[in-house]
Amino acid sequence: MVSLSNHVSPAPTFNGKGNIMREGNLQAPTRHPIDWKNPDFYDEASCEKELERIFDICHGCRRCVSLCNAFPMLFDLIDEAGDLETAGVPKEKFWKVVDQCYLCDVCYMTKCPYVPPHEWNLDFPHTMLRAKAIQYRVDGHLRLDSDRGACRECREQEWPGASRDAKGAGGSSGPRAARI
Image (cartoon, rainbow, N blue to C red; front, side):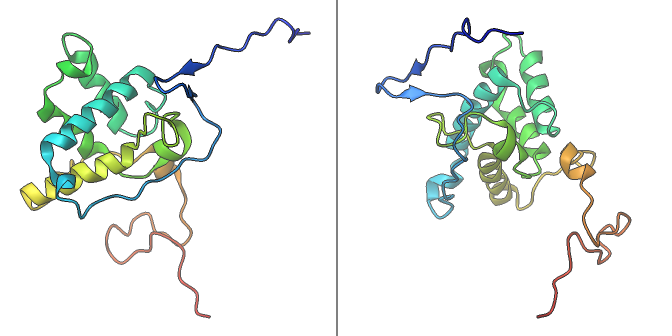
């Protein structure tokens, strides 16, 4: 039998404001609206800075490695960099990670301990969406890799009424709308 009397809780981590920062908060994730009408939203340098910040946090955690191809791609880029840090990865390679994200939200809703209300305010899918919007604005189209795979959870999901071989041929990707 395990004695709980010797169990010691980890010391809380305080931010510079005197508040306790908790990893893996038990509160539900909070989604902030995307400010897509703001011209700064489409600033590529600002987006790359945010990508680097988020990728650095993801690199230190790696809980999401099994979710989709974006995370192994990110971690391989960092591991192959000479200094094993995000700063060692050329910024133009960040877009390889963006191209692998399907915006399925699994990382945000189930795995990441740093989503809002956490102080680090990490929203991987919204940042990927912003980067894809910048790609579209600059290139006129998204640069999608044809060989990328959907996240494991999305591939294994059975959608009612969906035909696996109806690739764009009018097949339904979800339940039919019912008439009332």
